Image 1 (tube, each protein chain N blue to C red):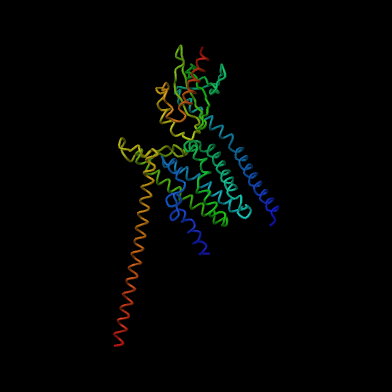
Image 2 (cartoon, rainbow over the protein chains, first blue to last red; image 1 turned 180 degrees about the vertical axis):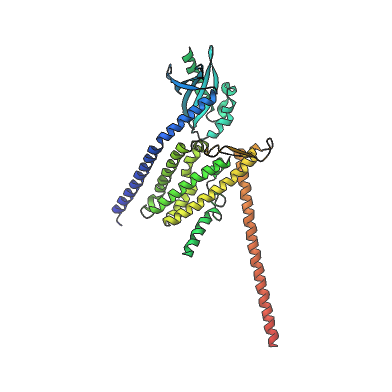
Length: 172
Length: 242
């Protein structure tokens, strides 16, 4: 086979493989996109309910300012429509990957009081270390300045603190 | 027909026993150590791995005469990466607990040497059905091997087996084997994973060596018996001649 013909066949074959791959991934995305969104929404609901155990419903609230990590605020109420607090969906990433958390704060008169955190998505390469080594020890470990031992701990701390600031901005 | 069936059976079984990718070839050890904290997670990992292996082997075998030799490795990697991406999306959509448990190790199936190795060593040189059987055997072998590791890690590390946390269509069941307080949490850590893996490999090496010793012993005995028979025969002939 001549060189020219060989290069043409190689290019066509590789082009076909690349195009087929792209098509397969696009079709899979179409099929699964809504389900993924739905399951993320379900995790958000599960997160809010795990932080605010008396939660009856929650409603999306407008944020007072724009923030680096805080994306959405949810006002959480109980069955008597009394405010239990706010749940904030925070999204951040570091060199190890992306983390999405639900951070709960309740109104403690003059300040926002940390209620809890729920991990929605943790795509870090060392995701398995976060829950046991850091999340489970909150809020005691929140002021620990030497928390770099667990991957993602610093990012999580910043996300939680920013959510607290967002809560105070809403209540003040 | 019978010969074909025998060949297929041998092809399937080799991946499970004689050429087990994890326990014999020692390949794919990274996910094996990382995803074997629980039997359920190991089963999930094994299933996803098997699906990717089967799909990539079939496609590589279908395209084996079209992919030029010079670009076969990048072509195989594109094929494998496509299936891994599809599997990742389906897992995220339909098995979100498995997706969050396995995390980055689903994506790492792309660089799992077993998948690329079987594509290059077998699928690129054999027909589609044979490649499918090879992938099925290797996948089952790998899954069984990581379940074996997970069995010991979960039993010794937590004292119990929990099902239904990842595959949420199963009712949540916890079976306590070792009383609480007597579990060794080391086995849930990476160090424990290495310990379990090395013990399993040591046991397999012991069994293999014993088998080899037995075969050598039997061969030696057979040689001695034949020699004695020959001597007896020679003595009989000599006696007859006298």
